[in-house]
Amino acid sequence: MLDWQPISQLKIAIDGPSGSGKGTIAKRLGEELGLPVLDTGLLYRFVGWRASREHVLLSDEPAVIAALPGLMSDMQWCVDGIHYEGQLCTSELRSEEVGAMASQVASLPAVRSALLDVQRNVASQGAIMDGRDIGTVVLPDAQAKFFLTASVRERARRRWAQLSNKDKMDVRDKDSMAQVQFDLEQRDKRDAERSCAPLLAADDALVVDSTVLNVDQVVDRLLAILHRRQLIRPT
Image (cartoon, rainbow, N blue to C red; front, side, top):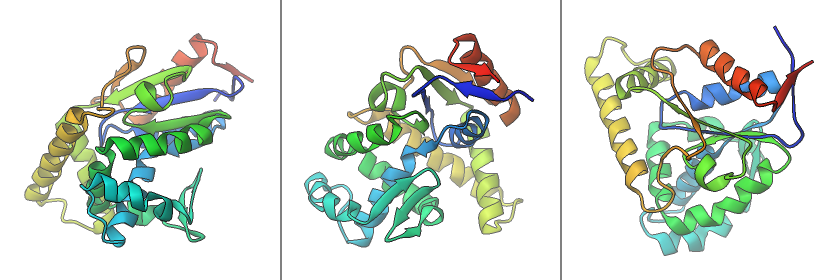
């Protein structure tokens, strides 16, 4: 197995819809390259979660913006996730309920604008950042941009398996998988149709369909591309 050395301040953008594997791939790529991995979706999940706990209507853009300084006051975004009041709260942010909250606040243009500098500052010294508008909006100057996708059925299967392990769901419950697929389709629609920073591949992003690829195959493909572009070198 090769060890890799990335160029100085290498920024890698990984975008894609929910269930495309971008979080897993970003983590594995970070391990291979020794770069911090930043999940921007967690930031929106945190804002939605905190706003909801403060009884802020998530569809009320002025109310969310007004509350934002207070919501962010005790938050630290680190490589291992989001810390709030000194405690790691990443696991609480991974639920389907909080994911729906994130989708709502992420559709608000003023919220996205307010969080841009937070994301860019964290990534400025080199990072792998995954989300839905990294290559198009957050890091348009990233030296490498990848857009991961997979069929909605395969993405639903992955998400269903993840939830089954987490919540001990009955893996024979076909209705639960149908619901997961429906929820994914609705989220895809919201993400693609929002007026501000919709989900789409950057013009210079490489699209990778992982429907029939495993994690190792995708990671190997991305490493080969980075090496070919002389953004990383073996050590």
